[in-house]
Length: 190
Image 1 (cartoon, one colour):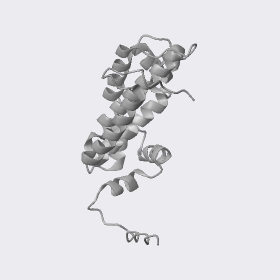
Image 2 (tube, one colour; image 1 turned 60 degrees about the vertical axis):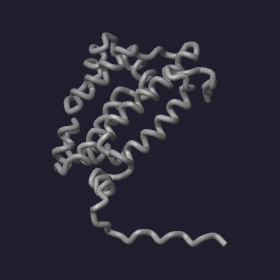
Image 3 (cartoon, one colour; image 1 turned 45 degrees about the vertical axis):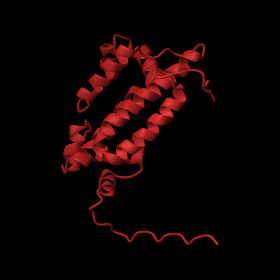
């Protein structure tokens, strides 16, 4: 496993691994205080993890090179703007002026996953944000996020988060009635 030297520093003079750890702690608190910011927090978390991964890749000889900063920004903007549309890999590759095969390698080096996996994760994050912000039916949210239908959203949501969208939505609503009694506290150890 690759370790990061504590002398390598990010822009603010903080070691990259510590910067990401601090961000994750702040992001968790941000989600607790304002769940509507989930989409933005996930995007920033991905950017910071991608930067950390790029730093590791650059320190390994023979590792595939990632995307340039302008390419990452352009892709993020394109994906966010066209999330509800079909976004094939050749179209994304053309946006950053790379061949399909080179794009897939560079994307994986920069984002830590395939373009398809990233797109699915962004769609799920957008669905979560819409479920928190609106009372729209799940079928409408699924279409707005680029899923084929509600079943497609449910299948991928369960695969990624371990529960259905409706169960997740209910768990996020503190005013929703619970179908079971809360668990009793554990007895204190003697």
